[in-house]
Image (cartoon, rainbow, N blue to C red; front, side, top):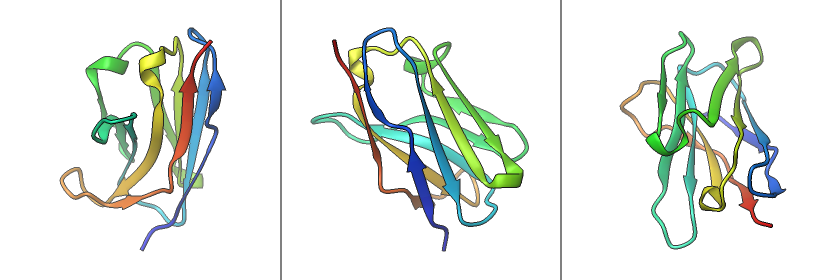
Length: 114
């Protein structure tokens, strides 16, 4: 089992920035973020392996950056140039391989609105 604790969500104006953090209870290969907007299915935002391989959704490329501190078992999501369509509950995810669903955090709300 892996416990995930997220932080950093909130309300921000369009064009603003937020940084999400997620700490895992132990080391795990792949960590990342998914989101679920109102009336939408959960979708991938970004994932990052402990070796540095990344995967981003096209909608966030160039605006969001995922990083991790392997010593702290923590993954970060720096979100810049936020848009109203980025409004969603953001879920931290951790998995032993790219292919398995893994473990989920409780979610943190990000609202982009003026």
